[in-house]
Amino acid sequence: MAEDAPKPEEKKKSSLPSFGFAADLLKRKDGQETSIEDISDTIPEIEVKDAGDLSIDPHAPTRVFDFADLLEDEEEAAPSAAIRIGTFVTFDLANERFALPVEPIEQVVRVSTITRVPHAPRPIRGVTNLRGRVIPVIDLRLRIGLSPIEIDRSTRVISVSSRGRLVGLMVDAVHHVMHINLNQVQPPPDDIMTLQSDYIRGVYGDADDLILLLDIDRALIIREGNA
Image (cartoon, rainbow, N blue to C red):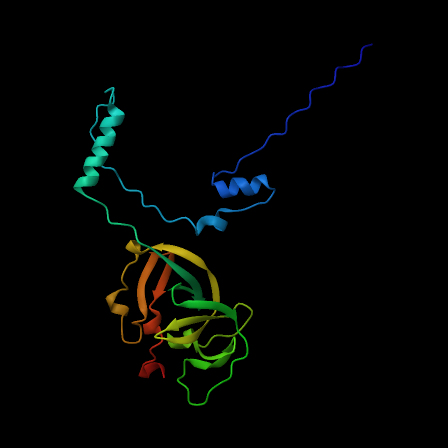
């Protein structure tokens, strides 16, 4: 009896991810996994607007060109505002999300030895040596009227430059750098703005994921109620 002819070797099927970002495809090719979170911070937000009622004969042979002409006419009639992107570092204080612009930030470090200073304003936890330079460390929780930070493995000090001085800001945890469309930043509600809360620069996001943007210069002004 003749032996059965060997079956041709089946080609191994490859699968693509559900999204087609080039960085993800390349990592899959190299045998590395990635996720949308790994690259989401590098992608600016794109606002999709309703094009409105563009009346075009769907059977016209030039309908593609007619549609393009209508879009150009609408763009000239009502030019959209230029998108302004700001880069911020996000961090936590008492389970609330805050953000600071990256420009004044020098570095983010773990909490090291902090020496208390007698009679210093209450939000100042003390001073620390940062690469040979002694700087004050402000507990941002105390600055905004909350209980002091319980230092643990997640606690960080953000060193910032403000008015020609280097200052450390102690926060619960630092998350990541993100890009924010400044056109979508809302002013803080008038009924929460006082002399003690004028450090709030704006509010970004929705009710389920709000980020409070801080004005670093104002946050470092310690008024009588915080002393």
